[in-house]
Amino acid sequence: MRTSVEIVDIQTGKPVAAELFDDVTLAHFLVTQEKWRPLVIEAAQALHRASGGTSTSIPRHWHWDWTQKEADLRMLAVSFFGIEVEGDLQGIIKLLNVGYPCRIPAQAGLDSIYIDYVETAPWNNKVMTEALGQQRKYGAVGVRLVEAAVQRSIEEGFHGRVTLHSLPTSESFYLEVCGMTAVERDAKKQTLLWCEFTPDQARQFLGED
Amino acid sequence: MKFSNNREWLKKKAEAEDGCFVSVGGLITRLGQAEGVAAAKPTRSAFVRLLQLARRERGLSWEQFAVKVGVPLEELVTVELDESFIPKPRTVFNLARFLRISEKKLMALSGLLIPKDAAFNEEAVLFAARSESVEKLSPEEHRALEEYIRFLSEQ
Image 1 (cartoon, helix red, strand yellow):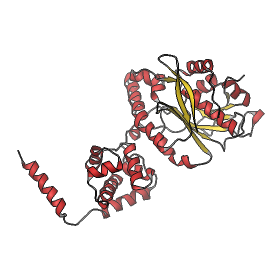
Image 2 (spheres, chains in turn cyan, purple):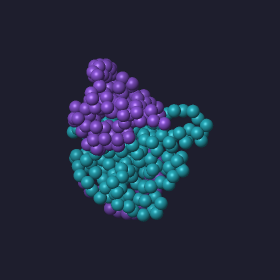
Image 3 (cartoon, chains in turn green, cyan):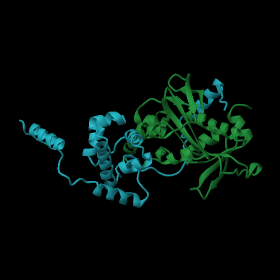
Image 4 (cartoon, chains in turn brown, red):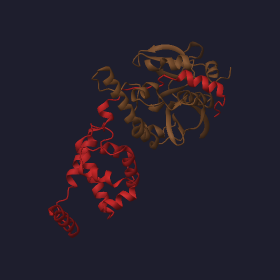
């Protein structure tokens, strides 16, 4: 599947044509290694220097090693979506369609699409581009990837129910921008916040209500 | 799948997303790991030997090999000469496809991934050790060596 969508050029504020696709391959993961990772490292180092710190860790929410997920490409319960502008990868998401039933009492036990991993290119992130002294490129990449998760949920017959464990730094995105429900801190998952879309919330997120 | 074409919605969402992190997921990525410094030397030796033998088995020069695989010659030569050099993922990907072997295993061998299985390292050491040639130089190797030593001897 490849479909045309629009995202936003941050510099002009105008819509820009993008392609959302699900035929993600190892080659896309390699792009994240070759093009994203050096910038993430550079931004992390710039911030460490600016803060006078000596840490050698990239903040956990900044970058995943997507090549480690290569085996997942062949699993039926797993799907990936990517988003490109003129052939350049702007964001990538990994979804699971089994194993994560909903927890909100009204929909407890019902199937959901679980967002396992998601990342946008460093040039689309405000904190990283500011650390690098560069201009941001595109906005709404994360929104489009979450939209893909909702659409996959609808396609699977889950009516837009989407779940995830949010990292602390991403909670405002999922709660305020997407409008998900903060259900509970999950003691089994590093006390990360378990968030859910109900079908109504998913429709609201899509701008349908 | 139907995606929204409502530009007002898009604009509003883009503004709201600005400045947010969107990541979810698990583990910390260490800087050192990200920079590839954790490459295991035994596997690197095996990686270099594998490339050498694969090239020779096909009767190709490094130049011809680089063209066939679709990777920069300079990078191939650096891989062979510099044990600490970590090749680009794309290069290893192309090599794996050309050699028809697992991309993931070749990445581990090259130092791009850290193998979790101890047996993987042991096999790599054995291969590197067993594949080291004890034969005398072929006439071509002898000639190339002489020519290069002559070149190096010139002032």
